Image (cartoon, rainbow, N blue to C red):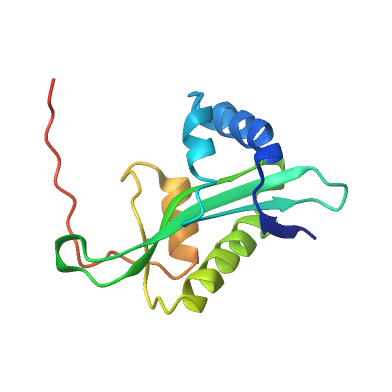
Length: 139
């Protein structure tokens, strides 16, 4: 069983370490920015207080005429705790916060080749959305 709560500055070292272990990229400044008041940044703790995972997002509105939607920016679960429902608990807690603010849609972006995260979001009931991402290589 896990406890879900808002992330705090004191969590950032563990959050950054978990993310770096899984992505190979250190980005402590990015995680500090997620503590902004307009963001929803949650952590899951195990019964003994260890970091089980985190999720971050915010409500964004009106880009290219789209109505307000909750956006998931990041989710990361300790690999030893995957498939135990921690990710689903975090996702549901974030969605509940979005609903409290009157949002009726939740969105995210994922890499097509990242089958693990695609499977996770599909298991949460997410499907392809109404927008198409466009991309240009600037190198």
